[in-house]
Image 1: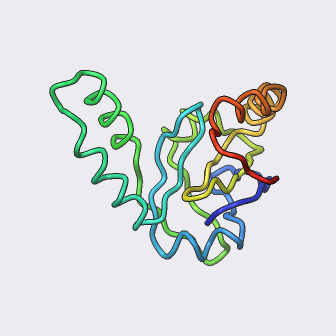
Image 2: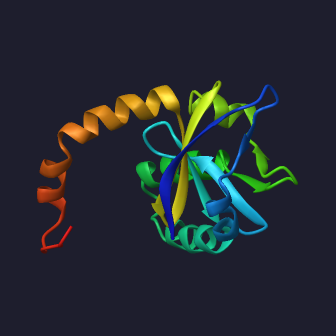
Length: 145
């Protein structure tokens, strides 16, 4: 399980350090793809394969299903962590997520998300104001927090 928030910079070649706490969970090879909300999703191979099976079951006769699967898989790249603990993010993925210099890596249960710091700050500020309201709508059982 991935959790936590870490800030790192992207170097001039498009590389970013993956926090040590995420490296073991990601394994030797993993997948980075276009996520939702203009961030990148990073999946361990096993989780990626599970997701791939679910997406294969979507009805290809539906335009929305085709569009989502096409978008999701076309942006996907297989990555490995180098000896310095970094990954190279392709230019098309950096462009999609508006990643320039400062980035935030988030652990989100079964995946890691990579955000532009500016995008994350904006998203976080907006979501924080409605956090309790969102929880009330989504959580239909009592959780002791």
